[in-house]
Length: 380
Image 1 (cartoon, rainbow, N blue to C red):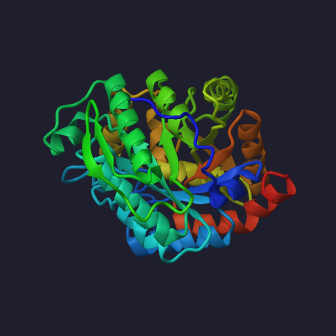
Image 2 (image 1 turned 135 degrees about the horizontal axis):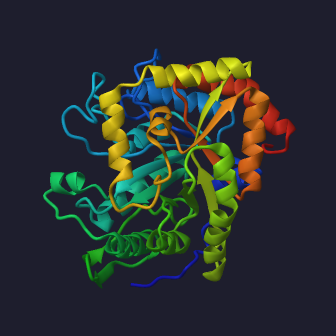
């Protein structure tokens, strides 16, 4: 199934405002218990809606461009261990709908596993509704899923890697047509059928912001065709120096693929930030997270991403998984901004940060790091 590679009529004011910055700034919300770090070191981070709402409102006040949460389907006990890591997990589509009513400017991105029993008509309708609630600030992070256990939860057989993206391409094409076509839609696709399907109201800006995270060839073919923002991972793991060596070629490859189909795509990477007034304090906190690790949960968490047929995250070590995030930035406010500059110089258009103790770390980041980003010219 084919569609136009670009949507010349699509202009998202929120996205365009974010692009005015040298480096877009997002917050990776802690929608799961334990967030990104399978550690028992002290913190107050919570998976609850109220906590995530407070994070989002504070991020908006501090000038962040977007918030984003991952979706997952876990069995009882999550990844196990004393903390039952990630057993509690709220749905990002539902959370985003709630956040739409209590925010004014920030982009709200929902992650949905589109191959877990969804129909394009469902998501086109739900997405257009949240987009209208938010005033045109809603975006969809399309993921296909790769864990056999998740497919089995829905009574589905796992799907081969490249075939997942072929199905996602058809799904997204149909969803975009439902957002943009003025007439009822009847289509007999390879995977989905529609007869007299129609969605109104339409998204405010013609369609919704589209996002996905990928590294594989099949995934990138999908991403440059459909996505406005592509969440990338470091091919060299979480070490900042190694990441900055590997990322220029990775980003250049992605952007060249986009240009080949007439699209200007932007890439965003996910750093875990540990920032303190002194370098010693920052690395002391880093060590405290490692020392407090829940070994069983950490083993299971690492094994999940080290296995599987996905391409992302493969270079990340077990200890790096205990900290969380894709690239680790540890240091003073000045060192954090220097690291962000290096990621920008390596071709990244944005950072989607996560923290260990979200609210206090976010507040400190906003007060000490954001002004330095503005002074460095990374933020307006």
